[in-house]
Image (tube, rainbow over all chains, first blue to last red; front, top):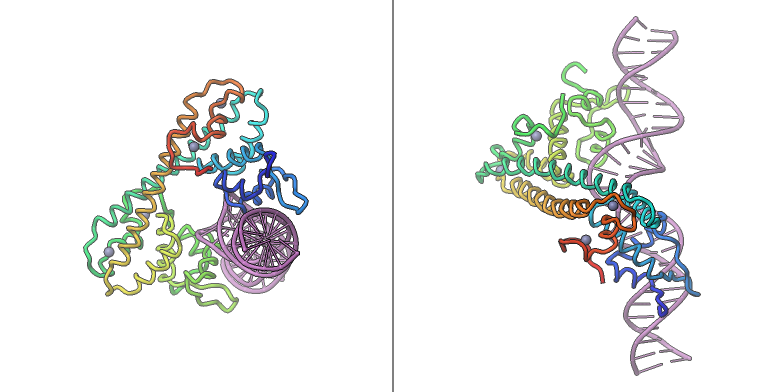
Length: 146
Length: 146
DNA sequence: TGTAACCTCTACAGTGGCTGTAGCTTCATG
DNA sequence: CATGAAGCTACAGCCACTGTAGAGGTTACA
Ligand SMILES: [Zn+2]
Ligand SMILES: [Zn+2]
Ligand SMILES: [Zn+2]
Ligand SMILES: [Zn+2]
């Protein structure tokens, strides 16, 4: 713990990443296998902690682990051109934009359903009615029946 | 197939739901176990097809299967008050709104990263730089370090 | 030195909502 | 009656974790 070695719990506290998740990242090769103490406990360097912080930050921004793997590879080669990194971020931005557009359409549909709320019986419930019949929806960006 | 009985493939075509997914819904109790033909093949009624269409439509609108299970129960009791159904839809709307808000914040962060694109080297790449250091982010709605 | 409290270890199962595969049997059509 | 499509069961895999069990390691304090 002195000379800059961190236990897995300290790593967890410093990065906000759960202990099991750290072990999982090691298992899938996203984090290197660290040193072990005489009692077989993992000992991490500050560099390992920074790498984990990078991973967590990218995850928080929605990057999938495969993209993060690429980004880490790139980060390890500072003299290479950064186009690949920018492309990964651009792809992520596009994915986020697509998800936002889809969710906004769902939001509208849900609002429309709920606008007709009337406190009546299920038989007259607009929510159930719309779910049972997509033609009562305004948007056509979901569903694909006969 | 006459007298209104549908094979699983016909169900699939009419609802846009994959065959395996239909069997999966049966397995988790979302669809009832249908009749079987003499050769052990599933035979569905129109009612079953409507139920599946309801499930798929709700899924397309993002409802989780547990919520759909509740909605189906409610739909089966038309004389009950519809408050519970409205509440489920309202909860779904809220969940969608939360997801949109989060994604919009991610979108901004990604746009900020990419705005500084310069076609240089990784060492000066804003994308890598920001991912390595959350304090370079504008929003605080992600990450939780030491 | 004892011991209690806490941390870490491995290994594996479960989450949600499917999707894919392998190796069969059954069905519809010519 | 042969062929090919469609159906059957059972199970593994996807993503990104999360939780659990049961063992062993470490630390703080009396
Ligand atoms: Zn209602
Ligand atoms: Zn619809
Ligand atoms: Zn760059
Ligand atoms: Zn950040």
